Image (cartoon, rainbow, N blue to C red; front, top):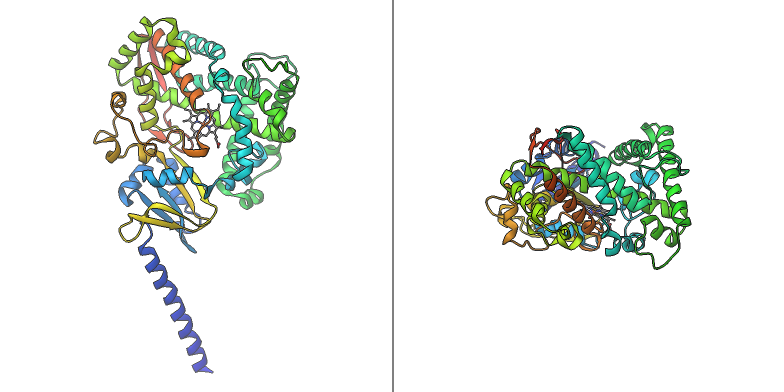
Length: 477
Ligand code: HEM
């Protein structure tokens, strides 16, 4: 009996040793491993890169352009990469999906392009696309009012403002008009709540959704209180339903030049819940994007009084045509400033996808980590655009400096500049966002002689690339 135990024990030990050696051999061809304290969820990585954004870049310096996060049962549970080929492949590849977001997002945002793949995502994108056609976004009527209000608020505060809250409110107003067809300044048109209350609920909902995304479905169901979140989602939905009703009642004139997204999406949607999901998801995609870009532009310009003066001279002496779609797009100074800001401070520094089938990334495999890397289905990948954008190999030794002039004679390849994503899922709002930011910048430069930032840069990249310390700016007339 004793020798039987011995035999079984030896066989077991041999098997464990075999598995261990096999794993070590396989690991030799995998990217370097991030040494995690939490081998179950890698929460130490999540928190350290969220709480200290610069850690995202430091880890690339330490491990190289592509590294892996391992779990107890999986030596390559996730890949983090700033290799331009890999970062691009993850964004454009049909083997990568985002359906994993749906359980955390669905209750508030339903089902739409932000959390679906394949035919469902294609259908959503097709529905939204007409809303971004030129006549619809080449319309500065709303933006003119937004800029007037921003400038009036700065003047009323003697030039000293917290730019992010100002931009958030202003651009929420513009998004509401563009997406929902609701004027946030109106009150008694039958809407279930005023726009300010909606904004507060929206923020609360986003927080609840973020926690649910982080914890995953089963932990959220077990530990998080349900009633308040459900109530917040219901109220948000009632506001969106009001916009849908309004869109349905709108003038059906097919020759009308501009339409709100609610008017465009509702007739194409399967039902009310479907229309609501598309609108809610676009609200999320547009939120804190143009505003964050504009705040970063202003913050960076405060360190370049020469450039502000040049910009001011150009916009002050220009004809009124400057403040048109074509005028703004052909102004090199403005365009260079926007591109360089999106390079150094990409609004979305990193994007996550999951491999929906076995696939291969162009680099990171083999003993020198420069061979194609086979990736099994279920592996999570983080494409880090920020890391790509500060690569010295691509942008030169001054890659970490903000120099809009570099764009005068530099054109990055399609894989080297990814602020709006890439491929079939690339941002639909890109042209609208760039036109809005350009317009706001031109109006500010026209009005104010100089500007000074009172807050140093400390990046917070937990969702979008903002300054942790806010944007306290002093404008001088
Ligand atoms: C500076 C401003 C903006 C930046 C930097 C930005 C960036 C991005 C990025 C990186 C993606 C791709 C996400 C991925 O690959 O998973 C994306 C997608 C998208 N963005 Fe934007 N965005 C901006 C503004 C906007 C605005 C204002 C709107 C709408 C009004 C918008 C609508 C969308 C939509 C609809 C998608 C999804 C496309 C799809 O999944 O098919 N974006 N955006």
